[in-house]
Amino acid sequence: MEMKDAVKALAAIGHESRLTVYRLLVQAGPAGLPAGQLAEKTGIPPSSLSFHLKELVHAGLLASRQEGRFVIYEARFESMAELLAYLTDNCCGGEPCAPTNIAACPSPTSARARRSKTSLEESTS
Image (cartoon, rainbow, N blue to C red; front, side, top):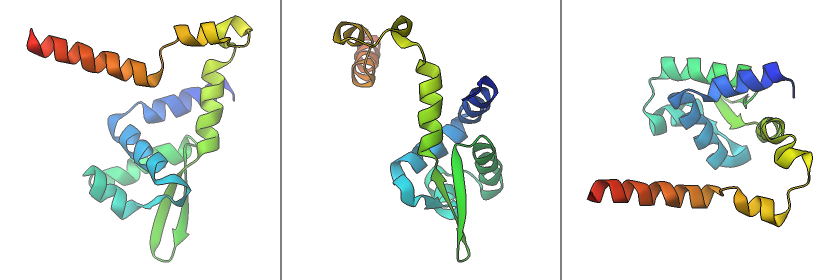
């Protein structure tokens, strides 16, 4: 992946509405979802949603297909995999990540647990 493509993808998902749509489509899997269902689930007006979907398609993060009178959008998992590979290229100084290095990196689950614990502590103080 080229840097310009990574920047385009990151800019596309760097908006709350687009990130919400992308995450819904990841959850939907390869079957995707019709634009109307995306509008219902997100509460984004169809005209705004159309703009956001166009941005995600242009960035290569989504694909669309026509099924009858519906436009179905789906996440392009290979594009996100390329973006993640680009972002983590040369992880751990270019050395293979050993279990000791991996243990030092916060996992998504442990990071979520820390945020929840911190939020709980802040709300009780």
